Length: 220
Image 1: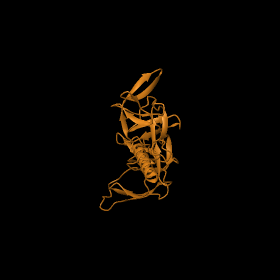
Image 2: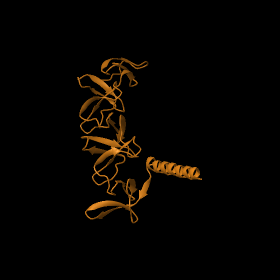
Image 3: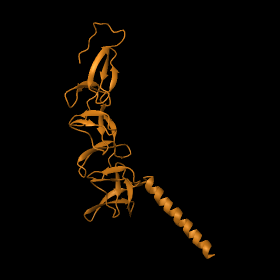
Image 4: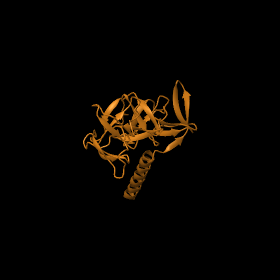
């Protein structure tokens, strides 16, 4: 009887533990509100203070810390232990937006799930922006992608030069693809084939495509 009771208790403990872990991993949301009490803001669901959980008030997502206060100005790991998320100065989780993060000193991008972009290109008004391996928005000049092979050029606002010939960091002509990466190898605009260095993409020369009239010209 004693052994049977012990097995039942052990089984219940395992089920309870798995249930709690699944709730955390699934990023379950509690519906609640931010309330001001005794000089601090706290997150409540009904009359119950929420702790260690995400709270959605109908407009914004918060995270209630162990004392019930919302996490603010914090770049932190999601409870799944894998993704990085951010809560701004108002305690709002950031989604689909760029955000300057003071703790690391650079601008990041967070996707529709609130997860930090790393080594990814995102687009704003059709223009590409690159977030490097650390999650930092590339800005202010020539840079190398995280793959160690490709190059790009970011303006001061992070927008990448794209879809045109321009100069590299040494003043040589290169072509920037639609995604901001410097072209390498053989490319064509329909009139000409352009030979671009296989290493850093600088322009080597060109020849006309088949069927193109000798009078057709294109100035780099």
